[in-house]
Length: 327
Image 1 (tube, helix red, strand yellow):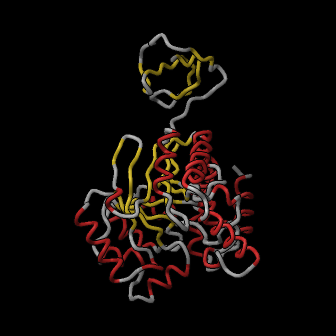
Image 2 (cartoon, one colour):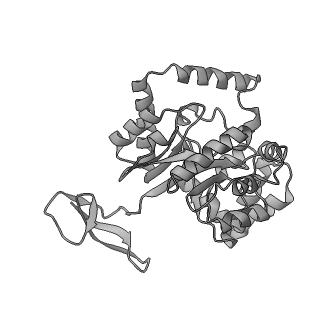
Image 3 (tube, rainbow, N blue to C red):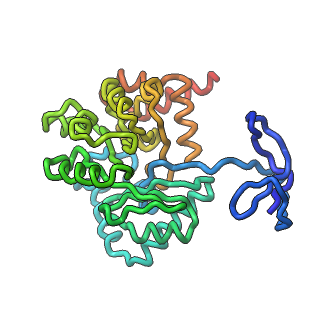
């Protein structure tokens, strides 16, 4: 296939307009004589990676947003609606779950997202998500229930869960240690220090912070991915960097759930590899990228992380919007 006169970036990051040739899903330097598409008003970009996403969140349409995570599924009117949604989701057939995941992955492809790390939300739909990934053609990393589901294919990879603060126990830790010993090259993931409650929970079990608990248990290395880290201290991030841990930043969802933002500047200063995620299905990946640019430019994440104990999302949004007008 020929993409005729398409706008693209060359190896020096200069914007140029020229033909681009595709063959067998690869960019090549020859014309295979296939179809031709006029792209004179289109820009070709590399596929984006949504490094953290919860499948089935798309249909909630904001049902869990603008509400602290600790209050989810409570007895408030919003919490009761959330409970009804979870019950209804549990009654879906396998085919309905495949179609739901297929809709979500197709929506991402339309945004230019070609790779997604899909984690469970309230319940696990591993088989349905795997089938939807095959049907959509998206590159997919799925959270597995156990090592029997570990897979490594061109378009599918799986990750095992690390115990998180709310589920931290001797038994859960021992299971993760056994998995780590038996599958040392497997990807391991966890939500980490997302909320104040999570921090207090792990501290109540005798640890300074969650990363310290992981290190003492021998669970962190270059195959570990820690998500959110909104309440991570500089010392915790430095410790993670020593273990070559990767971290995922989800700025919009963290602000909307009133958890604040990750200390992005501290992570970058410690050479931590950072991925970006929408977390929720209704958010746009380009908005996530733009927010991270703002935080990097004005150092907002480090300032807010240090100064605010309780978050005022509207004030944060106003502050960023006001500063944006200055550039």
